Amino acid sequence: MNLFIDPKDIISFDMHVAVEDDIVYANSEKKVLLEENKNLKEDQVVAFSFTFKRPSYKDNIEIMKRSGGITSNGETIEFDAASVRYERFVSLLTAWTLVDSNGDLLPATKENIDKLHPTLASVVLERMEEIIG
Image (cartoon, rainbow, N blue to C red; front, top):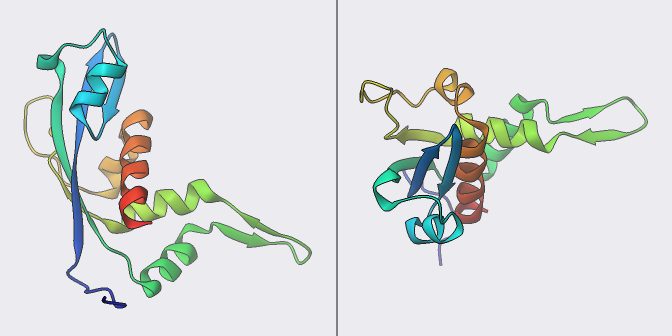
């Protein structure tokens, strides 16, 4: 049992994605994606890989600070979970295999994360949080 995070520790997973009639479908399991969306055909599904740094305690504190996810007016403390999740995505993503319309690999940057379809971003975040906790 290791109670410390190795700074080089990463997690990687594939996300299976299809687009039909401008609707984005995504799931970490191709079989589930196809079973849940009978309108999709296997050849429409493309797999993309995502790699994230495993966060340490300090990383989590820094993410909370940068996100502005906790605010106080002196009487109450508010927690903005969406801002924290976004900052977690931006801070921990180290690589992906997403490509542009020409098939060129896109860098895994904040600017490109900001352009992601909300459905894909949500599903990727859910999977990351399942693994990282």
